[in-house]
Image 1 (cartoon, rainbow, N blue to C red):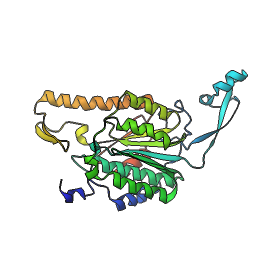
Image 2 (cartoon, helix red, strand yellow; image 1 turned 60 degrees about the vertical axis):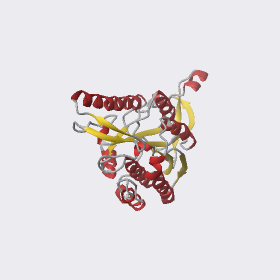
Image 3 (cartoon, rainbow, N blue to C red; image 1 turned 180 degrees about the horizontal axis):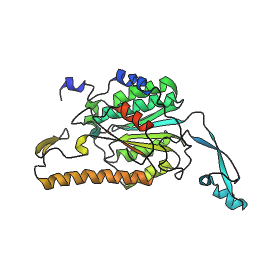
Image 4 (cartoon, rainbow, N blue to C red; image 1 turned 180 degrees about the vertical axis):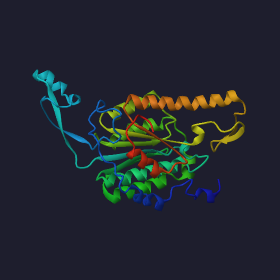
Length: 314
């Protein structure tokens, strides 16, 4: 890959461009809709359901109380039905979990998936502080970089500087591919995202397995989660029939999809991957937004925030 190409905004995010995304956020803050209290709270009915809610007290159930907030321990102990009461935090931590593994440094059109991840993380961060929230992050690209939630412009600018470093394609392509990297990051996330946080996961989610579902379920019990899957068009549909040279940066080979049956195998492989991710997230009431390398990130996120809630995936 030529040095000139590596400096292109198509393969490496530009610091000034990420800062400029602030202008795209005006009028589109991450406004809360409902308080995030438990896995049972309004599955699929809102995207960003609200700031963290601190437990205040339990009192005897009154008509009109939300039955999802029943305090079963106090109810069993006292013999009378009790419900939990909460008060809203003034600030909600918003934590971005961003994948910059070797597979994210790829695109056949538009920009690298890593660039999309950096742009989405920046937009989300600017949007969060517009709403008075604090921004933290866990970035992983062979190593993990943890940023504790911090408010204001300083919190976002700190994150943007780290995104530019993490999305460096030279370092990213040299990193060793680690199939369990996402699971490791989810385990580490407990140190960064305290209960009541909004967690936004940016990844291509290629390395999901049963453990991923368990870790997401544990995290989802006490936090609101949004999953953003970043894909190239080759991960959505097969290219035209032909024989294509392929490389992971270390080895070279050929992808032969000249025959119809091979294109069908190709299509089925990615369809099964996407279906598996849908099942894992839907079972845990985690909304999913899909972005491709050709998308305008700011426009896509704005549309998603404004759109009526009609289902699990956009």
